[in-house]
Image (cartoon, rainbow, N blue to C red; front, side, top):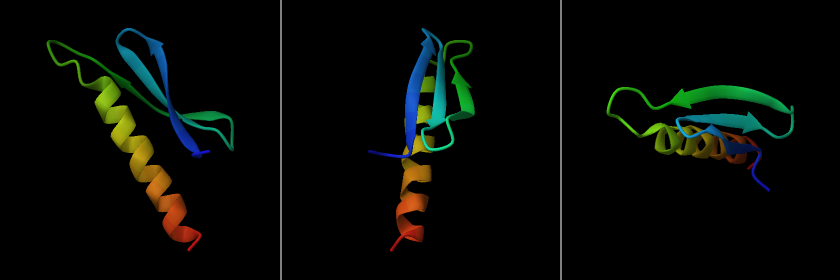
Length: 57
């Protein structure tokens, strides 16, 4: 199970959650005509998970 996951808060807001620490790491929101909050949150979670993996190798 990955340490960092994305949670949909509402239609425009996504949270990156640290499942080990049980806390929110960051919030990404859609604004103006840009609807890329989920994509940005997924990228952040992926990068954080890669950093955790590289420390354990």
